Length: 420
Ligand code: AMP
Image 1 (spheres, protein in one colour):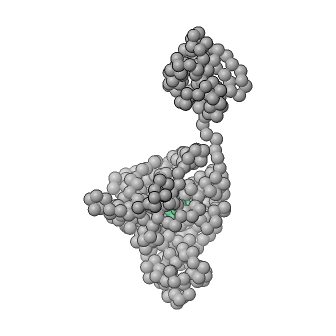
Image 2 (spheres, protein in one colour; image 1 turned 90 degrees about the horizontal axis):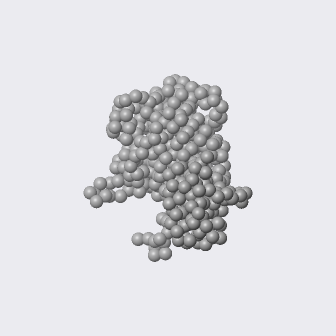
Image 3 (cartoon, rainbow, N blue to C red; image 1 turned 30 degrees about the vertical axis):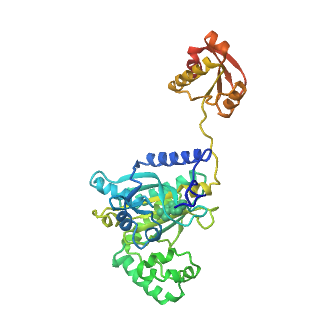
């Protein structure tokens, strides 16, 4: 039960998005969708909750998201469901379920969705947060990786934030590549187990790659001398990585090599990347992604390669300095005086709207002065005034709110006057 005083407040770690900030959110979402669509990605919507197994298998049981942060509940039928903590596993699940991978490839999809994780809230870390993401399913070419990395950087920049791109390759899980590296890493971690922070010691056996993700100073120090995956890549993965780097350099994306950046699960492969930005304190990651060539199989499908990213819009907004954006105004505010005029004003507003003119009217029963103030506040360019004289004469007065100029027109022709 929520505390009595808290019951009617937004739950901890959630945010209401109200005007004027909501205009920025609307615009951010639209510009992401427009950018992704013009790059050949199509919109996808998946349910806000999935069977818990989708995330257990698709994010991985060794991850913090799955072990500590999921909103999991039983429905009335006793089925375990989870509010989605991330978008990739649901999108790949949906693509496989509808056999998109058997059709024309690649399948390029984007989403803009709320995600849910029960994290300890702080600035830039919430329990409900918004991500935009893309997934390219079916291509294993390096140019697909470069396209995804470029699009993320381009979008972040278009939001007024200069991202730093951190890039790594984590190879593939076979012994010829990451498998051999894991043997070296585990040997190193076992030799230094006592120097690791206590909370990280279990990772040596459960998910050794994730040790690189630790925020504990003691562990970070140990990892500073750990063997690096990039020194152990097989020839194929090295060639792929070189091609990704070459393609990014060719289009002017600068990046920093990040040999300790990992996605610590078997089905993450090759390219791993993250975008960071200043002004966020500890939560400086604004997006991340990577290649997941083993994910489709982990979700019970055939082997289908894929790559994608997710960008955190809450954090991009903070990094951008929480800007306000211009919002669309109504074009016309109808000011009406007297009963008959008030009735006419609603009729006029509907006529204007039907003609494609943005229009608003008084819903508070205010007098002339109050309505003129509301007209100014609405940002409208014109006030259309209906007073007793106008009603008697079948006219309306159009007032240009920036110059104060007025003219009288036939009531039936207001929309014609305003659209020509
Ligand atoms: P991840 O799926 O953890 O790689 O997250 C991708 C991006 O989503 C991160 O870089 C953040 O920008 C954002 N993000 C992840 N978790 C949260 C959270 N709890 N609150 C706000 N943004 C988040």
